[in-house]
Image 1 (cartoon, rainbow, N blue to C red):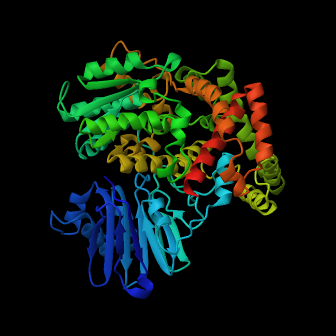
Image 2 (cartoon, rainbow, N blue to C red):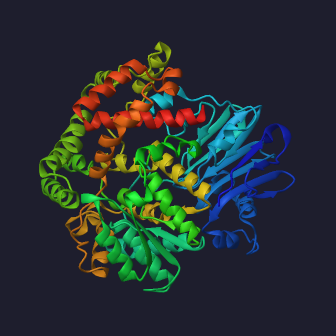
Length: 599
């Protein structure tokens, strides 16, 4: 189980020693010399290679290994670390503090400055309890979250606490003197793209993916959240191979059964049987016997931010079953949609290049890969992610200032009238909206701009932090092989047409899994989500929940919403049964419950 610790230090004033305090009796590994102190929490995947390069003993601790690496490579140290980790280095000689977070952010890293010292932790809650750290909310971030706008990956929901983005390093030479930079980037915005040759993709991907699953299994007895989709099926298949083949013990399958059209029960049971896995299939309403949204609100106190995943109560139930069965690691296919798929923004690049044949082929692939009506696919590919971004790009080139100002005005007009009744807060939000308008002409392509968001969008970091916190609370480690740095590196640089091999998305794994599980139709499987079920839950449960807490006292008390305006919007949503507005009401209640739990 991950520790809940805080490291504080002021190396520019009081020496190199990190002061480590924790509430779990599981402090991070620490290595200290007369002039340097290193704290390391996580796992180093390449520790054997590092030990050889640094002429270190094979059994040297991870923190000592990181210290030796820093002594060798200085501020380039993070470039040489592979794994999932949070690392802090206090260097009294250079009078600086260095903080690093793993490539994709599996381990959270938060920090704050208080009483002339720097405080670092993997836990927002632990930092809030640190003397001198303000407990005040970041009102602008909460208001943006309600508006489905996330502009700064470094911000958290607390004004004094910052997030170190994944794949970044922070260097502080004193209070208020810090710089943050990216140390890992599969495809930088400048320079040639090192595409993986198409003929090498399959072999190299399989090798890296197997290593990622093997690293996940190193954490102890494992369970897997087995859905009926290609992502978790591929993880399960490779895990069984590593553990010794069909019927081998050591992997426990847990499957959640969604009702109605969203059910994947046939595929879930068939895959578990084919792999010889012991499986526990749990119907949704056995996992969440009461009202799902009410159960979701009950999870807020332990979370660093409002919950993003409405299915949290159900999967928490599965995780507890895994824990009782002896599991210490839970594998999932999380990340497969992001990294095996192809961004629809590819259509804008194909239009710009006048590659009509490839565009038509992409449209056909997209239609075959998703459960979406053809008219909607046409609008998605040819307008929403095609002509519209191209038109915006052209207008910015012709009249950059006027077009950017026009886009900002439209974004400001879209703000809800009941949001931020306080004039000062409203003005701050408007200013944030205007500052956050992204360039309409991305440095490389629309495709690469979109997939970069999978590394840099605040919601991605928040989702991984949410999973980490749930694992910490349950005494488990969540492992997502598709979020492994080596796997992401190759998929990021795989040409889109290879990812679409066979005429459908996820071509890198689809053919292999279809051959391994004949009769399941994986070669023709389309992406399914529990959207129909979620819509029915929102429509049936939100009105009752709203009536019990319709004034939103926590949000209204902070001046973030006008309760009268929100009430009018909610009443209209209940009368019209408009799903978009009903989801908006749920989002408000979700945020209200989190704010109330942390006030």
